[in-house]
Length: 213
Length: 216
Image 1 (cartoon, each protein chain N blue to C red):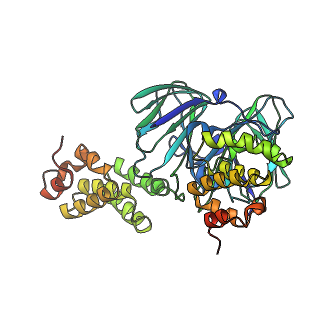
Image 2 (cartoon, each protein chain N blue to C red; image 1 turned 90 degrees about the horizontal axis):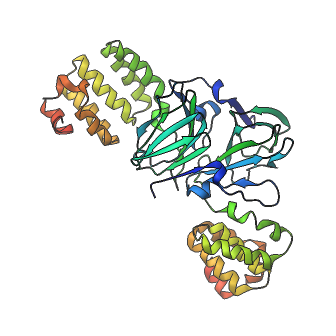
Image 3 (cartoon, rainbow over the protein chains, first blue to last red; image 1 turned 90 degrees about the vertical axis):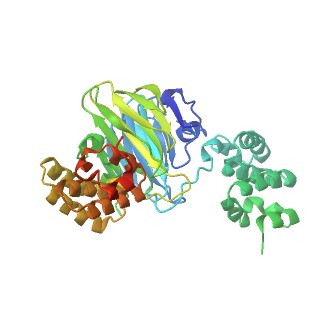
């Protein structure tokens, strides 16, 4: 592939039960930075869930593509008509609401002084509510199909491993943990003290995979 | 730390067609700029490749309507079109409506982002180009020699210095050394130099011929 083209409205929306969005980065095959489009159909709807990016830590840039948004940034209000750019530091809590129907925001993300990791969180997001609700077997089942179809996304395989381990299926957990570690070294680091994988910790295959000691 | 910075696209002072978003907002994680064409028919994205930077680039038409040409294919691109291009693929875009603006985001997969040399050296380069257009070649060279103290690896500055020195009647060894350095940093400048009339005063010299070959 040397290039890819799409109209924003043609990219199917995905949702984790909160605000839906269009996974632009995944759809176009971008690997160097994160990019998604969030749209609110109705004035008053929340467009961006309240969050910070301190975990990355990732910088984020928002551009209002259509309509009008109201941002709340670390307690400050910002009126943001179409064409407004809002650049937010990783630690700052941020959320945004639509002030007009069909308000769309482009969100770009990356890490200052670090490498952007296209781990595939976008594809895991729809499964996450099952994990949060403790329905680990069901989450693993949904997640496996996504991991198998998208082998480059280590984070999806890793989360499947966690769900399998929590569902009491160690053999399956190890298969997906191996896939994740084969794709990205950071999966090994995470696995070393992830409480979701507690049930595997004494398994010799786990020790060999994660390289304890 | 203020926590955030914000600006409207059209509040950011333009540098020609360029809206320098990254610089204006202080972004360090990726390259991001916009380009705007006031009139239909104007180029909004100059034809280029990103071989030297290795950047993947995403173009988003945020206002108006453009026609992209990517890898020889024409793409109709109204507002809301996304065009994602790999580093080695040739791309450009022309506005087909007045007031067309395209947002560009770029970075290299698997690498830490660094601000591109062309972005950092834009101001001294523009100052030198103004003197060049006024045929004040000596002064233009002086501006670039100063800028090169800060940006010794900026290929474009070395290349333009070679041009200005050539026109100012500097000795061939000086011109050849700047041109050699430009080509070393960005091999694309060899082809540029073959048809660049700024090198007419020195083109027949063997030191120049060795660097760029025969004029086409």
